[in-house]
Amino acid sequence: MKNVKIMISAVIAGAAVSAMCATTNGIGKPAQFRAVDLIERKVEPAQSGKDTPKAAASKKVTYKENAALIKGFLDADEWKYEMEDKEDKILFSGGITGEEGIYDSYRFVVTVDDSVVQGYALLPASAKKKLAEMGEFITRANYGLKYGAFEMDYSDGEVRYHICLPIEAFRADRDKFAKLILVLPVQVMEKYAKGIAAVLIGVKTPKEAVEECEKDD
Image 1 (tube, one colour):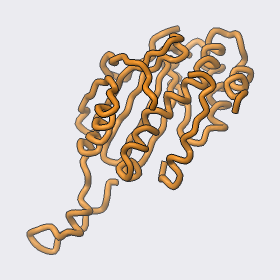
Image 2 (cartoon, rainbow, N blue to C red):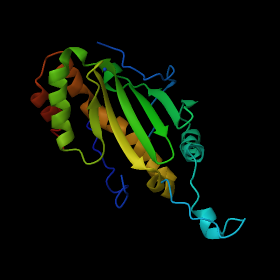
Image 3 (tube, rainbow, N blue to C red):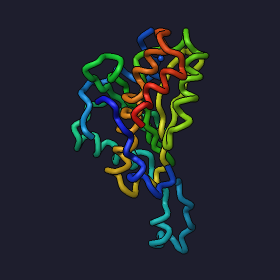
Image 4 (cartoon, rainbow, N blue to C red):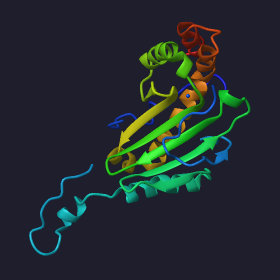
């Protein structure tokens, strides 16, 4: 999965859109599998003891109902994952294992609550000893990204890519937006992973590393 070009913009046109062990924020050990090709609304008061059709239609959709859309997509596409109910959101997590170790092995996490669905891809490496350099790298990389962004936790050096969508946009077309939430973070990580590794081991400056990752854009 080399020289991946991110071809996602058409899909979302018009939509309101961590050496070796990343922290997992309390998530269990991820399942492993090979990569596959891949508002809350205002409730209007009812006029009587029964909800009117308009009031019923405006009722809040629960986070469990929203999560069912992600689960349906994961099951249909045969993703291996773990699911955890956090009482105000549901968290899906798993691993994607490729052929080049750190370069294409990632952890994916999706969280779904009442208002947003968020997707993450995390590298199995920490930038704790290279915080300044990695901070520059992700700032340079983020500058040209249209959707989502790299993030770094300065407390432990976790590096991840993050994208978020309002739940209404997601519910409008589950398959398209599930692919966006699940696949885009992994595609971006595939594109920049070798550059991140080069910065972590000190063989390239952040500027050189980003330029190498983006040379085929």
